[in-house]
Length: 290
Ligand code: GLN
Image (cartoon, rainbow, N blue to C red):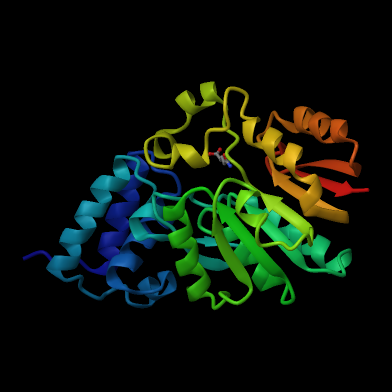
């Protein structure tokens, strides 16, 4: 009988994924094989001639089918890399995007350079990826992370345990600042971060299949213009942010001007900056309170 070694399997899957126009064919194949075999990706290359057992082949066949039906490979393996950390994810939370690492970078820079206080609130935390990356980058940061979806928070709780951050990140379920109010004793945050849902109603229709069919609409859809959640955050932020504190938000590529205007009209910010991502799209807004 024909034997499937790791090398043969990897070559076959890469070719097949390329033929089916799957993004990052080699990475996807490596992620699936290493997950099923319980090996690191690098180890696949060190054990090229290892023969793959029939039960593992059957499991992989199943995953390959789902992958070519556009199910995100990160959901299939249940984790992804974000800010050089392994983050558990499920279909209850968004797959963290590389652009969101820029939000984390700005947050860490702010805490390191400007804030004597290291109290942080991360809204719409989902898998907790932003809160966890900030906590690991700033050892004194104390973070409250909120989300309206308790299933997403269950994933975030697993991530906190995995990274041993339960003592520095507190998870609260509820709508934006609502669960924070009772916790705070009137002490506002030095930094508020958020990657809210910001996809417009019409964009929701034209998202790639892997996003539209599999990622949670609750984490993506931000109303007709994609601005609904920003409106509510900006309207409610004042009592929660210290003087000199920062609100740092991820935004959609066409939302820079509108959000800058919304922030300006509150009259509470002394500095508002819109920054582009590596694709030259508006992506991160930093607003510093007077
Ligand atoms: N960047 C994501 C996408 O384009 C959307 C993330 C979000 O709405 N926060 O799919």
